[in-house]
Image 1 (cartoon, one colour):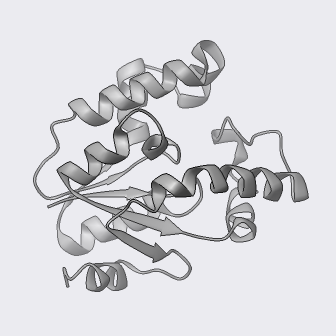
Image 2 (cartoon, one colour):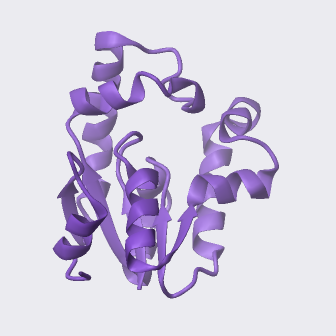
Length: 167
């Protein structure tokens, strides 16, 4: 079974994805790492040189042309479900799980990892929380198209597998 993890940056897609893959004995793929491999630079660099629109085109191509194993967990980028037809494609090709967290919890998680995140690298405090709140309001319409919507607060691989009837 292909499982696509979606949610805002900082929601734990990579962290819980690796743990869930280990628990289920599935392959784990970080979509952002695949993109970096394809473009031969970091996502931050690609954003700065080519802009967000070009990045979203590459993201769609890598996601939708990927030949993923049958038993795989794919952690997507926070914006991936919101562009092109990525969410519809993921729903048609696997089970999509939205890892949900409120804006303040996301801000706390993101405060120390902003250099790797081009959209927030210059934000802090209330400015960061406001950005997350606004962006989340735009993106949740897509995230909520997921088959499973799960609170990422204190989430474990075992609980997620149980919730998805995989345990």
